[in-house]
Length: 160
Image 1 (cartoon, rainbow, N blue to C red):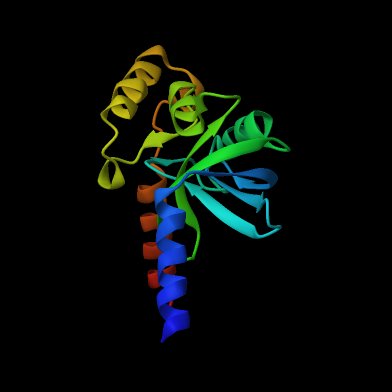
Image 2: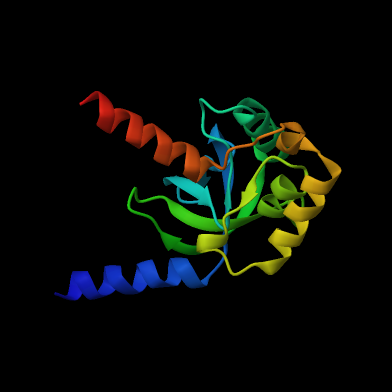
């Protein structure tokens, strides 16, 4: 019981205190691997945004943007929660004060994930990127990743 209580409080502190680590792997535009100071490898999923899936248009460019921005760098992670895949859902600060979520949306490589976000500035950034037709907004009919994932699930259900 004591071990459980201790682990509970350790996990809570992780969500309340920002921490740093070195980015050692980029999985896609909004997910990467971070090596913490105590040599723990964790997966981080960016909060409030969604980048194109690997088989979607612009996925490679979103991934390249994230890689160029943070790979090999020490970043600050502000954890909001953990998801069902045990990834840390977090805001990421790099190069002293840049928000990776904001930079991806401003540069047109991610959607503001309104369903899971309280960051209203992201919608303004997305609207501006759309209007300017930068990044994925150059596409005449960009499909949001959550809609794309849903269509893929429906296709699989039809095949079965």
